[in-house]
Amino acid sequence: MPEQICKLAYSIAELAEISGIGRSFLYEEIKAGHLIVTKAGRRSLILHEDAISWLSTLPKLVATPRSPVGEQGDLA
Image 1 (spheres, rainbow, N blue to C red):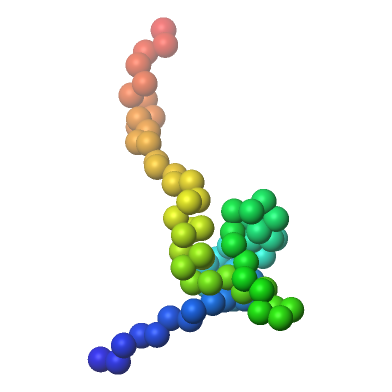
Image 2: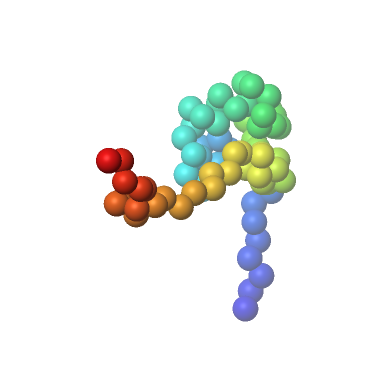
């Protein structure tokens, strides 16, 4: 089976598309200094390693189990 080659860098539009995260949020993260951008001439690129590192810093949502309806005790 051929080895899959990943890109070394992504444009903002590419990163938005492959990550499912909106461009506006990416620009906010760049402005806040959370997402590192590398410039190649006039192009803004996000290196693969920087994208992975940034994604790993996003908050995790851990779902807590809810009690089924009617099992929360008597209120009377």
